[in-house]
Each structure stands twice: as structure tokens, then as C-alpha cells.
Amino acid sequence: MDNLPAWFLHIEAPIFCKPLASLFNRSLATTSVARQWKNASILPVPKIPSPPNLADFRPISITPVLCRTLEHIVVREYPAILHPPTSLSFVDQYALHPTGSTTAALIALFQTVADIMATDPFVIVIALDFSKAFDSVKHNALRSRKALLNISYSIYNCWWTLFR
Image (cartoon, rainbow, N blue to C red; front, side, top):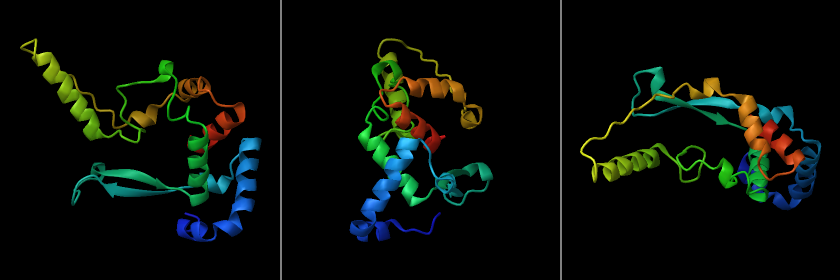
């Protein structure tokens, strides 16, 4: 996005570490993120080989490397983001977790069905398509859930700015 390769920052870390640390700290302290860091290139990635329809693609966002670096710092320094309190934890959610995937969700579903079939001869599974679920996110509900995390006000605001 910003034509700044991660390998360049890695090699030149001794030179850039102090100014970048200052920039990141200022961003967190003021709860603001540079507008350029919020831009992303959306690229279609095929879900299957040789996709015949547009629905066979999923969008991925290519964001600036400095934004991703700040995101990693926030997540590493504030583990409540990845490991929320049990009152906010959803064991049946498979998105946005390092080990989460559609495969993990299907395995859990098949295991549940197999467990039920061990005692009952019939199992009814109702499947819903949530392919447009992100088009109807209730941002106020999401914001109130995030407010319950054990993180400081400035990190909460900066995180909200980064990830919305």
C-alpha cells in the first residue's frame, strides 16, 4: 500500500526504531491514527481454483506495513484483545482466532452431531448463510462489547480507530 516493504524496515530497524516508536506512542497517546494508515487495497482472492463467479472470490485488505506493525504491538501489549474475559468469550466462534477456520467450525459441527447420534437416532442441523453478515454489523453493540475489555481508554479508542 505505502510501497514500504517490511524487509526494509527489518533491515534498517536500528535507524528507524526511535522515530517509529515515537510515532506509535504519539498515535496511542492521542488515540489517533494517520489517515494514510486507514487506506487499504482490496484484492479478490479465489476461494476455489478457476472461479466461474464473483461470489467465488473473497476480499482481502492490503494495509500499510506501519499500520499492521502498530496493530501487532497493540495486540501483543494488550492480551485482553485476543483473550477476552469469559463473559465476552464465545467458544463457538471460529473467526478472528489464530486457530479458527471454516475447517475447525465444520469439525466441531461433525463432532457435535456424532456425540448426539451416540444417544439419539436423529439429528437436525439448521444451516444459515451469513455471507453478507458483515454488511449488517451493529457497530454500537460491537463498541459496547469492546468497552468491556480490560484495556485503557486511549488503547480502546486507538484500537477502535484502527480496526473499524
